[in-house]
Amino acid sequence: RPAARLERQDSLSSAKRGSVVGRNLNRFSSFVRSGVEAFVLGDVPLMSKVAELYYIEMGSRGPQWRANPHPFLCSVEDPTKQTKFKGIKSYISYKLTPSNINSPVYRRYKHFDWLYNRLLHKFTVISVPHLPEKQATGRFEEDFIEKRKRRLVLWMEHMTSHPVLSQYEGFQHFLRCRDEKQWKLGKRRAEKDEMVGASFLLTLQIPTEHQDLQDVEDRVDAFKAFSKKMDDSVLQLTNVASELARKHVGGFRKEFHKLGSAFQAISHSFHMDPPYSSDALNNAISHTGKTYETVGEMFAEQPKNDLFLMLDTLSLYQGLLSNFPDIIHLQKGAFAKVKESQRMSDEGRMDQDEADGIRKRCRVVGFALQAEMNHFHERRVADFKRMMQSYLKQQIIFYQRVSQQLEKTLRMYDNL
Image (cartoon, rainbow, N blue to C red; front, side, top):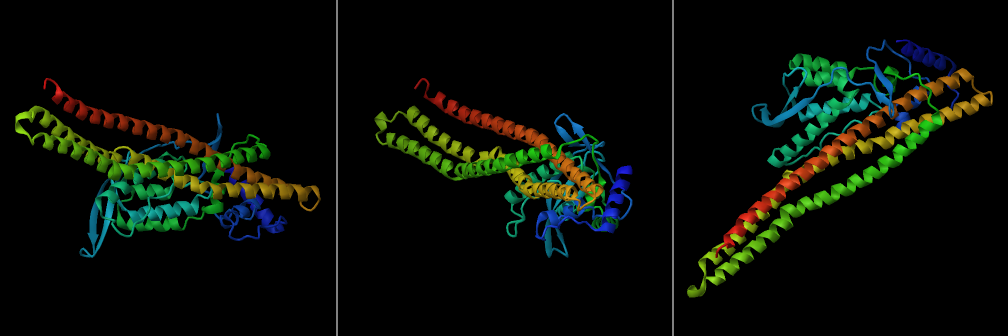
C-alpha cells in the first residue's frame, strides 16, 4: 500500500510541475502507445485505490514474479459443433474444467478472443501467448478442430502457469462464470478496468534491492540477442518439421507404396511358370509388398503422433517471441528517459527529486521485464524438454512398430 501512495505522490507532483524531459515525437512508438513513457515521466495518476497487487521478488536468477498462491490447471476438451438462431449460425464450443473448482464451463473461440484482447490491453510488459489462428473456411473440418484444440490446450497451460496472468480477474471470470447474465456483467467490469496499460505498472510491488541500471540494460541486451536467435531457430525448425510432415503424408507414403507394388509385381511374375512357381516364396514376397504398403500408411499417419505436437509448441513460442521486441523497446525507452533526466539534473535544468522519480519508475519497468524474462526461461526449459521427450518417445514407438511389421514378414522366409 505505501508503495502505491508513493507512486501517486510522484505522479501528482510531476503533473503540477509538468515534466521537462522531452517526449518521444513518434506517437506510433510502442513506448508511447503503451503509456509507459507517461508512466516513467510520472504522468500516470492513480485514479482509484489499487485493489490488485502483483509482487516481484528476488530469486536465485534475479527478479521473478511471486508464485500464484493458489495454482491450478485447466483442461480443454470436447470440441463440439453447436448451432444458434435455429441452425442458421454454427460454432464450436470447448469444455473448460479448472482443477481448483472441477466445474466445467463452455466457451466459444470468440470468448477466447475477447479474453486475449483484454490481456493485451492490460498487461503491457507481459508476453501474452497468441491464440491459435483464425480460419474463415474449413472451420468444422475434423483436422482443423483437432489442431485448434491441441493449441488451445498449450495456450491454457501457459496462461495457468503464469503467476500474473493466472490471477487476473478477467481470466478467472472466463474460467468460472456459467450464468449468462453474470457473464455479461463480468465482461463489462473487465472492459471498464482502469488498471490497464501503463496503470498496470502501478500495481507492481518491486524488491528493495538496488540494481545498477547499466547492469539491467546489459541483461536486457543479452536477452534481446538470445530471443532474436531463438526466434530464427524456432522458425527454421518449424520449416524443417513442416516439410518433413508433408513428406510423411505425401512422398514417403508414395515411395513405400511404389516399393510394395514392385515387390508384388515380382511375386506375380513368379506365378507365370507354374511348375517352378514356388508358392511359399511367392506368398512371402507378395506379403512383403503389402507390408511396405502398410508401412507407407504408418508413415502417413505418424505426424499426428509426433511432428504435429512439435509444431504446436513451436507455434506457441513463435508467438511469445514475437512479443518481446516491443516489450524490450519499452525498457529501452525508459533507460533513455533516465539518462536524459540525469543529464538535465546535472545541468541544473531539472530538480534531482524529479530525476530520482523517473529513475525509480524505470526500476519498476526493469524489474517487470526481468521477471518476465525469468518466467519465459523457466517455461522454455520445461516446454522444450517435454517436446523433445515426447517426439523421441513417439519416434521410438513408431520405428518399433515398423520393425515388428518387418520382422513378422521376414519370418515368412524361414524354412522355405
